[in-house]
Image (cartoon, rainbow over all chains, first blue to last red; front, side, top):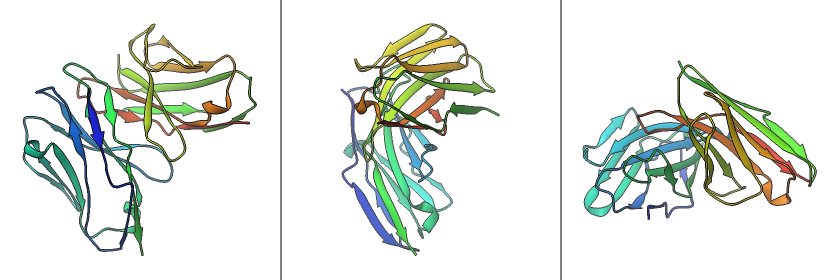
Length: 115
Length: 111
């Protein structure tokens, strides 16, 4: 069965520090998709990125970057020069199986950026 | 562009009362639709999903039910609320690209 582990329950950093959010997953599927979502205090989940299992290239979007490593089953998320607006709960998620549109979510990491 | 609406935004209901939460999607056809619940300080629990009108799959046996009377409408219901039904309810949609897009949520408090 699929499983997503976000071992960091809460992280606090001072503004402008870099921070990495860890995500480790388990799946027996050879084809799968990984995701990151942001949940600000307002509650709505915001989609950040999708990565498929055949694409291990790292991705950068502004201050955000993602490191996907199949060898360690990890899909980590780094925020560079953190800002107060980055304070949120971040969820990592995994598709459940071939042809499945359902997602398995991790329990989330609460990030607090202190000014 | 696609948008997803949920209402009401907040709801306070007594134990034993009925519930109806509504979700509608605009700007897309034949989406997959999902209901999630997020209890305070916890992760997301998938409650129901639907791949088409009248097609509902339940993830967890519980006090809730879902219906999809129209292509872009998804309703979450209960005949009698329990205290344990309190939480933040999120509706989401997806198409073939797999990522799900979430609505603003309904915060339900059962008293």
